[in-house]
Length: 391
Image (cartoon, rainbow, N blue to C red; front, side, top):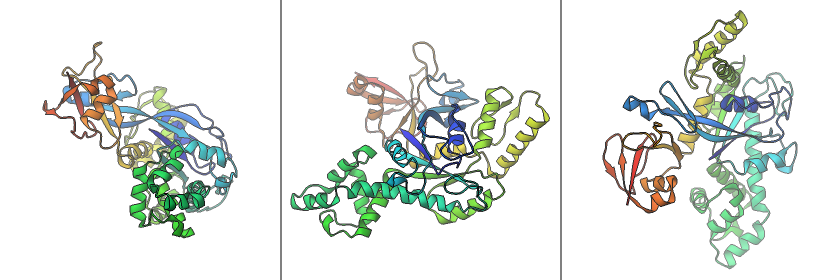
């Protein structure tokens, strides 16, 4: 699973990315500070299953902190998007090529209104314009892929009785579009897939829009909520768009994670507070007090909330632990693994995820909480721990 961070230049994408990954990337107050896509590892936060058994996990990947397990996934920060990107303006071509592999988008918005759609200084800029611009560019991206082949494609579907869903999914294969995705969009749109030559230009645009929203779901990470106009602009865009929207304070999250890494404070990502663990100077204390004030108003910095929402609510993934009766592996490590699995994952799917031979020789699985046996078709939920028994 790959989640892409997008937004217009200077919206705070790279700050969000660095706060989520602690990878050292360029953060600068000018457009196109990011040119090449940055890839890193971010983490979703779930309760540590080992705690229920009076133990602490020893993750092979990710980490555990005070009863919380942080499970890794890949995050990507791409170049800023400007109006006309679908025609190659700015770094549009590189931007769209990078985003092709993403499963979902985090759109970082600058709520401050202090810079315009190209990342230049401004006063009282309306951030809803950025959302509309990026929506349009993404829709034009999908529409452009369709239009490249539409005339001949539509005739071929009708004359040769080819399956519409199969033909469209092949055209969009580089964007991870499946036949099921296309089938869902056709049903939702009410369009006739057997007679695409009769579709109007508007119907084709509507189809591209719905296909984009279905195959690249997006959340609005409303950044810079701490700025003077932040809260007002947040309430405004929340009433205007139907995307999930979470208020964010990427600068604050980055400061807290860096201070925690330096041993100045103890901070668990996603928490409402932190503990100061060393003597700080007046400037450091004042900065932390301001961050805490913002957290008190909004519940958190929002970064961890966005990451968890994308993976668990939008993508519907589940986190599953492979777990034997003793919870440990041959080296004594407690629950060393935890895997993010797609929605609809069964016990047999999970067995194959562990190893092909385990899947082929699957007999049953044991839920380590209940000690009950479950069959191969048993649907898994996030946080489950399973022991797989084989022939």
